[in-house]
Every structure is written in C-alpha cells, then in structure tokens.
Image (tube, rainbow, N blue to C red; front, top):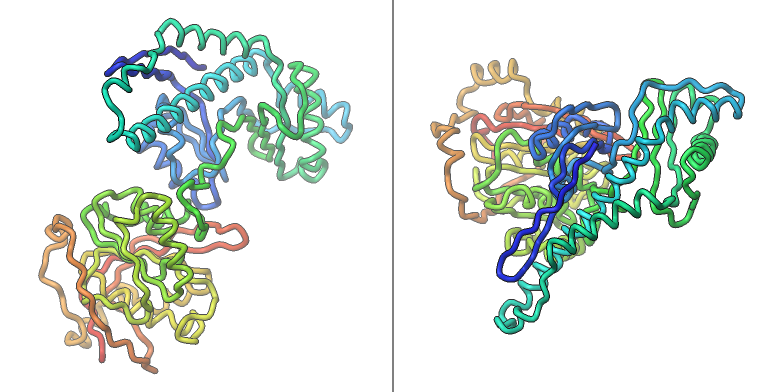
Length: 482
C-alpha cells in the first residue's frame, strides 16, 4: 500500500529529510453539503485520483506529502483508509454477529499489519515536518542574533542514522501490539438492532482476539473508526488528534471555518488583487479564510459590536494577518464606502438575532442588501450565508432574469449600465478604499434588485440547522433613491 524511502538534503550544514510517499489511500469526513467541495479541493490541491464521495465522506488516493494533505480547508477529519467494503448484515444473536464482524469488518490480518506500518511512517513524517517548521520559525526569530560560529556548532545527522531510525520504527511496528479503542457509528437497518456503543464493543473484542491488540479506552495509541450503514462498511484510522476544521489561528471561534472557506471558494472568480469586504465580520472567520487563500487581496471587516471587533483583532494577530485586514466599527446599514468600491462582499448574515437598528433581520435584509449591492463594482460578486427563512425572502427581493427584462423595458431610467468591460476590471490593481457616508433612509416601498444575477445556491449544514450560500454577480448599476 505504501512505499517509504528517506531522502537526505544537505544545505549550509543543515540536514533535512522527508519521506517520499507513494500512493496513500485516505478519506476525510465532511459536513453535509461540503462533500462536493472537498472532492474538488483534493483533486485541485493534491492531484488526487480515485476520488469518490458518499454522504459525509470523500475517499481519494494521493502521493502528496502528509503536511500538504493536512492543509485541506473543507475537511473535518483525516483518516488512513483500512477497509472499505459492501455493507454487512448482522444477525440478532451477538455470538453470530461477532463472527460476521470478524469476517466483514476485521478481515485480513495482513492488511491491518500493513496499515499499522503505514500509519507509523506517516506519524514520523508528520513529526519531522512539524519539527522543521518549529526550527524554521525559531531560526527566523533568532536570525539577527545568530553568527556563523553559532551555526557551526550544530551537529549534523548522517543519512545512515536517519535510515537506521526508520528501520527501528518499522521493526517496532512489526513487533508491538498497539493499544486501541473503537469509535463506531451506525445507521440504517443495523442501527435498529444494535447501538453504536454495543457494536463498538463487539468490534473491539474481535480486533483484540484476531490481532492481539490491547484495548485502552483512555489513552490508546490508535483509534479505529468504523462506519456501518445500509450502503457502506468503512474502517479507518485517524492520522491527526485534532480535526482539520479546528484552525490553530482562531483564538475566538465564530462561523465554522469550513463553511467560511466554502463561501470564499464558491466565489465565481479568483480574488487576488481585489478588495474584499465583510460588513458584518464578527470575529473575522470569513475574512481570515479568504486571506489564507488570497495573498494579494485587500480585506476590510466591519461590525457595530466593539467586543466582536476586539476578538477579530486578536484572531488576526494570532494568524499573522493583522497587516492585511483592516477593521472598522460601522453599520452594514450605512457602509462608509463609495459606490463600486469593492470587488466582492462576503457576509455571514446573523440568523434571527436583533440587529443594531432595532429591526429584526427579515425586516432589515432589503436595506442590508441595498448597501452591499451599492458598494460592489459591476462585475463584482456578492456571497451571502443565510438561514432558510432569509433565503426564501432573498429570492423574493432579487428579481428573476425575466423580471429584470420587464423592469428594464418599463423604466430604463432606474438602471444604468456600466460601460466598463468585466474582463478588464479583473486585471485592475487593488483599489484605494474611499470612505463615504451613504444615505440609507427607511422606505416603505419594497426594494427589488435587478442588478444582481444569481450564479449558484449551495446548501450546507451548520450542525443544528441548515443554511444556504447564495452567490450573485453584479451585472449593472442599480439606481438608489435618496
């Protein structure tokens, strides 16, 4: 399954090595609605093959190094695939069920031994990668104070020592009986007869008897993850202790990072050399994910809550992005920017909470939408995360293409087409933000937007509820009454 060999690089008395890893069989878990985006991401970033997605999981093969794999943004957890088979049918008798599990879930002893070798090698690779990263950061911090004489005191590690260490790891993996515990999840017909806990105990006993591994429920070396459904039987071993979705740079959590990343990735165009605004930024989750993806863009975050802006500032500092994201205390009802000042607006609109204008969100949405539309240039994009209720209202607020044509023919004075070419716009250098006091007075007349053209709607799960990501492109300038 895996071929590992050590390569030693010598540069300025530093010896680095890494494991060139041939094809690894992996899978990631994903939140509902994120499977398609994860499949696209592993193909794009890892050049993955044999990509297959099922509900909540994406399977793939890749020869990318493990550190690169851990940089996936849409995944929840990362696993080394041990076994993926057709669904099993369990009898109600526990003794008979144990025999079926031994055959259908545990299976071939040699596969488990090889997977243990693979897992051990990947853990060593990840540890070496982390050590190099820590060493590099430490050297950068101490660069000014270090002298050539200081550097010469480091004792290089020989290639023989490195290969010897890898052989020791392989030998330990062959000889040891690792401790483990089983994490089981089941659904469908099996779940009607067996709870996940009961199945976990049966599977654990089968592994112990068949492989000789030691059960440890508190601090095991390995966690065996089993998923049984009417369609699949999947067995894997987590490669990381912490979920990929847990960003180390998020000191204060807000919107789940995978969803924030999805909002960025679903934008129809690349956002480098662009000005990007989040007028309700909260702790800055959306802007941070966008800033990780686009190194040359300019970011602006606004919020009316000072405490939220403070948390956003702390997140920016923890991520090293404080110089790239500007924060401003301002209301999304009156964005202090000139018309057409930004290339994209990304916004997680609060669900059902009271807004700063003392109006509930359904009432405030049309005015919010008007301000966001106003500051986006023609050819720019609007990406909104909305609750199911607000999504239904949004579709009524923004005209359909058919209504657009009717509106244009009935009142051409209300719509002004921008003569600038969208392709040329995309090549512009970042714009200087011009602050502008907008007029957003309340109107009893329903607001209908003909300037925004729907591109895509994507449903995602937020855990306790679902939401929609809406993507629009501004195709013309909407006239605003003042």
